[in-house]
Every structure is written in structure tokens, then in C-alpha cells.
Length: 307
Image (cartoon, rainbow, N blue to C red; front, side, top):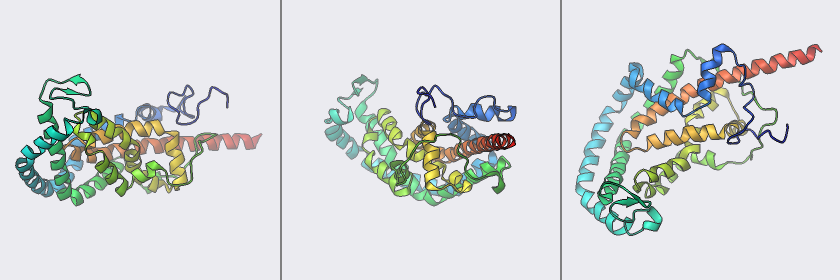
């Protein structure tokens, strides 16, 4: 490799990933989508909103929990709003260096045309209500997410034989630690809960708090959403780490948008389902590319053997 060739996964690398130029026509659209992974988040939202076979089963599985959770959440919000507004005013508004809420109409030094105290309280309470609804709908939501992923794969007519063993695409793949990395920890259930608790108070800061929180969650969220893909291919932990490292900015970009949408109070529950659909669509395109790389490598080996 020349000195100008960046390592796999480097941001802004001049050299494109291997096997991305002169791809066959049937891979044209998939290759274009792979250039901008956050587009799969949009695809997931579109399919969830337009495909009756996806949104009707998901809603039926969650509707009773949503109704009960909203009832309890609204009762909690109404009974504690004034108290939490007082807490926001006397503790958060007096900690500008930590949260950026310096007065009633500025955040992080920028003017905002509304009462920051009331807005921050509303957002804080809405996050709590969302957590209450999540508790009541947790089982149904988990089933709805899994079904959404599986149904998306089935809708693309991809059976178990579609997923083939992992193929390394780079001649010199990046070296990764064989131990458990931070992204692996954050993609687990306990890691996701820990990060959620850690950034609970940061999310009080309107907009900027969610952006910061989503950035730190991005890698773990993307890895978590592609667990079914890695399992279907039978990839080892080391192969998963190398695969993600080669696409680390793709996974970070996809995970950032997905995490940002999922943590919008209440409606984020819907996005947590649509993100599974987007992840499934991305997995199909990644697997198509793996098939193409495998065919090209096999053709090169045959050519070398014939010499």
C-alpha cells in the first residue's frame, strides 16, 4: 500500500473501499445507498409508515401498553410538573457551566425565543413519561422490533441460505483488540441502560443535550441494531470488530441518527421499531456486497491458478 492510502475505516479517506468501482448494474442502487448509511434510517421510517404488514402488527402488540403507560405518565406529569419546574429553576438554571442554561432565554450562550425554564421542564418530564410508557410496553415493543426486522428480511425474499460466511474485503484489514471493546459493552442491555442514566441530566439541555447524548450512543446503538446480521452470518466477535472498524464512520453516522430519533420523547418508541427496519435493509445491501466480493475474489484466485 502506498503512503497515501488510508487505513480501512479512516474518515475522509481518498482511496475508496475495495470493490466499489465498476460494480455491476444490479448492485448500483445498493452501492449508492451504502455511501450514506443514515439514509437507511429514512427508509425504515418510510416503510413502517406505508407498509400495513409492518405497522399494524406492531401497533396491535403495543397498543394496550401504550394506553396504560400514557395514563400513568400523564398522572405523574400533572402531579409533579410544578415541583420539577422548581428543581430546574433552582439547580439546573444555576449551573450554567455544566448544562449551558444560563438564564431564562439562552442555552449555551445562544438566544432562544421562549422561556427556557418551562421548556427544559417540559422536556425533562416528557422524557420521564416516555420511560413510563416504555416500561408498560417493554415486552410488546421488544417483540414488535424483532418482528419488524424479520418481516423486512422476508419481504426482500431473503432466506437462511442468503447469509453466507464472512468475507474479508480489505487486503490489509485494521488490527483490533481481541478483548471486549467499549462499543461491545455499550451495545449490551446493561451498557445501554447505564448510558441512558448517565446522560439523563445532560438531555435536559434542549436540542444540544440530545445531540451530545446521541453521539456517545451512536457506536453502541449501531452495533446493537446489527446483532441479528452478525448472528445470521455466524461471525466471531473478532470478525464483528474488524467488520465494524472497517466501516466505523458508517456505523457511527447510522447510529447517531438512529439514537437521536429513538430518544425523542414518546415518538422515539416508534423510531425504535423503524430503526430495526432500516438496519435490516442495510444488512441486505451489505450482504449483497459480501456476495460480490466473494465472487470477485474467487475469480481472481482461479485466474492466478491458471497461470
